Length: 104
Image (cartoon, rainbow, N blue to C red; front, side, top):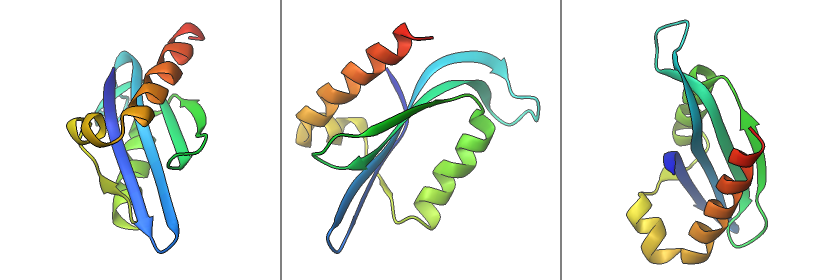
């Protein structure tokens, strides 16, 4: 499983995550800025059920990730931090990843 972004936002009473996982790669994007492919995005309250969506355009996805960090208040979490501190979330993400790859 290849994570593109693991974001966590804790402001006031908000405790939410926004995660992007690479599902497949097609090659270079038409604009020449990154790799083109499919990704799984998951978002919602940490500890709750996350909503998910499979997206195609990774060039726009990179802009969304940058916007989440710059204006959305999301801090990037490392995969090792996720493993160590949030094992239930990690298991949930692995399950969602497997289901998503089956539907491709």
